[in-house]
Length: 397
Image (cartoon, rainbow, N blue to C red; front, side, top):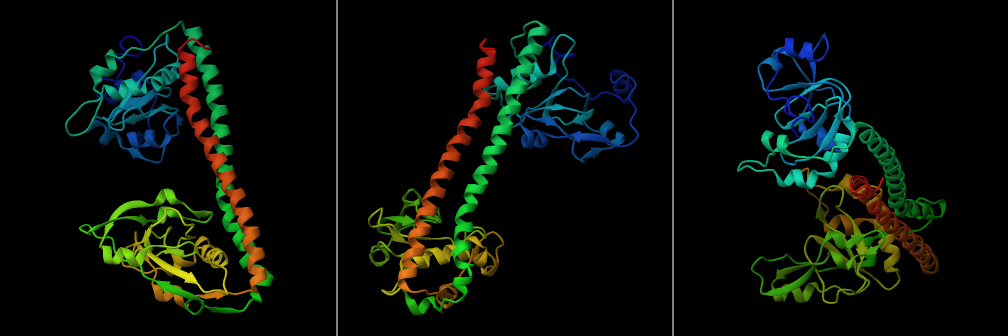
């Protein structure tokens, strides 16, 4: 990259303050100097760099290997993860984890940015090091990019900036729609269980209307291969068989833990955001077992299992168990079987339970279809920047 950017393409040493003032056309610092690290680039990865509140003093700059760069510098993280990029919109300094590329008058800043963005896989391949992966100054200096006339660089950069801005708008809109779709199950359940009608329903303890079933520990030296149900199986829109994992359990325990269709599984121990998550077992895969990380219950004949599941999902989605789970660890919380069995569950007439379940089933299925469609749409959008870069640098603009 020599000859494309000022100096060797990377400032080769920490300049003195006099050199900084000279190269920055007499700029004077009244206070501490903005400080950028590869972490900032990792958070942005492709956006103009807005300097954070992090600062370094002039004395600190003089005592370390920080490098001063002017606005318009293309910053690239050169230590793992290699290849995060940003354009500095103010003068700042960086540490050794960044390579700073200051374009000359014959190189457009944003063209350089996009050329490097296109080349991230090749740049990553140049990384080396035993302690941590890093792309060296020499490797950066010798790296080549296509260099058309300046007017063509500006044309390409302008088109790409416009296209990338459109992609960002599409991404933001789709992400907002996806978050709204993810919130639908909770909204539907609140509509049922926070309704005026729900307040008039009689209530009974879950332990009075459900049977508690065995759930045994996974054993690293168990003598039986099993398909164990995990929290990944439990969702508000239904049981997900893809979350089942292979495990070992003692055969005598496994025989007691095989789950039947219609049983309800509740996450007994998990992170604060996942403890208490619930789903009704759909019947697949056959022979799946419940470990002791789940609480396993089966409603009695006068109670619709899907209705109970919906109510327990309502509790989970509204943060009920997150607020009541115990445990010394902040990252892992537990609810007890006694808490579940003592919980008061509303019991409307069976005919009303059936109507509610049918309505919720349709709503949840529609919400799931919407969520999946938006996830596919977001995946397509996320692939667009790479496709646009390939097109631009293959002469497609």
